[in-house]
Amino acid sequence: MSEVVQDNSKSPVVRAAAETTPDSAPAPTGGSKRKLESRRKLLAAAKKLFIERGYHETRPQDISREAGVGHGTFYLHFDDKLDCFLAFAEEATLALQDILKEPSEQDLPLEESILEIIHRIFGYVESHPGLLAAAMVDIDVITTNDSKGRKMLVDQWAESWTDRISNWERRGLVMPGLDKVLTGYMIVGAMKHGGGYAFRDGLDKDRVAREITRLIVRAIEVN
Amino acid sequence: MSEVVQDNSKSPVVRAAAETTPDSAPAPTGGSKRKLESRRKLLAAAKKLFIERGYHETRPQDISREAGVGHGTFYLHFDDKLDCFLAFAEEATLALQDILKEPSEQDLPLEESILEIIHRIFGYVESHPGLLAAAMVDIDVITTNDSKGRKMLVDQWAESWTDRISNWERRGLVMPGLDKVLTGYMIVGAMKHGGGYAFRDGLDKDRVAREITRLIVRAIEVN
DNA sequence: TCTCGAAGTTGACAAATTGTCAAAATAAGA
DNA sequence: TCTTATTTTGACAATTTGTCAACTTCGAGA
Image (cartoon, rainbow over all chains, first blue to last red; front, side, top):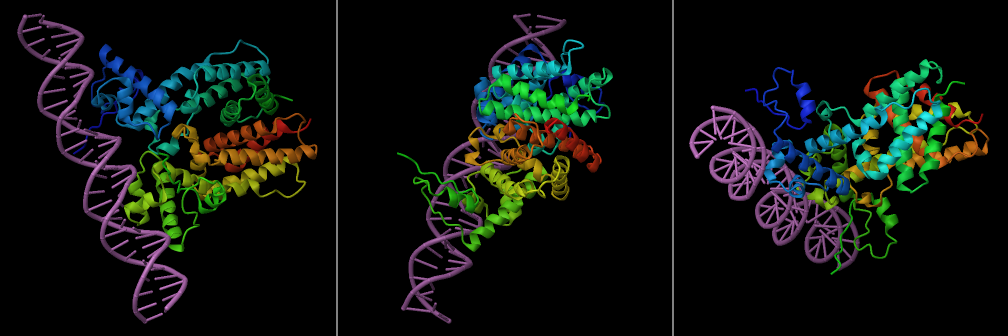
């Protein structure tokens, strides 16, 4: 007997997109106003608790209590804690991807362009503590079930960097022969860990932003 | 009433070192042969399962069953799953830190020195799939209780890079005025995410190693 | 070798958490 | 209003976690 298991966790938008799949059994509905409201409350609670306590110390029951909904409602919206975490990360990703997607002013020099992005990121991190770190988590260590096909923030950002580098390459600003995808990932990693250190230790953000920019520019600029 | 809670998870060596603390209540014992053997079996099982299934899908009972010890023994050695994971990560860290600590041949040029380290790392990763990723996990997302004072691999490696950079600075190989700690973290991040991408997508390891090296050298070398 | 106490293990048990589902509540249409 | 479809709910069953008194093993000393 082939069981039919519903994956009820992706954002309604994403779910609708995936719905072309024929054997995706159940209600496609984007969600009634009431249901969406429950989901919103759950995700807000999840966000608060995952950031405040971390994955380990957060239980599904804590989330539903914090959200002010019945315990069963949690399982109406998510398969389990991991599924809820992934939905939370997806939402954070949605909010954060635009920071990189939004194009810089055209034909800015390399350095200013990068510095501007870093400032965008740092600004966001200051006003949303913990969110970026959670969205950038190495999901493979938490689950090996490939996160139900979600594209995590790290990959999206790496892709955005790749696009930008391609642009700069066309304008002759970066050295030719660069592996642009690899470079994109390296930049994301350098920023994640460099920025993480800077925030943990309370370094001066402007100085750090300039320093990170300087190293990246030196690494990729045309000679 | 001030409860006394035992932290029984750190490696015996580390625990012994921390033991100067006066209010560290309990048995300092490095462990009898029998006890150490149980711990070894548990950690081996934890390693296997955490890597194979990830943190979420691994239960303490799975670990003790896999280890072939009684269920209670798990809690004899670890407070809970998180504690066990941290002990596992600590062990992996112990095995991996030498990769960077071990000094390269003296007065090698910058480029060859870095390339050599990357080759060391890639070699290790190929023969120990999943281990590095687990040891480098962003622990803050899993728990906000500062991981019981353990120094994670990322920080140790960043420190090692900092030392190396200091060395190169003395030899006049890197540009002056570098924030060496920040740079250390950036290098670790760039390698982690660049390398992670390369392994996931099965890129040619030699080429990637050279490319990563090239970017890092360009970023930090003296002009 | 034998005895004894300390150290370590064990699984049965209690406590806590997760996941299910029939019934209740709410919304929405006729 | 009445009827039907959707969503919520918390009581309940199933699973998992964590404890502990009894048991086993080890080793020192007689």
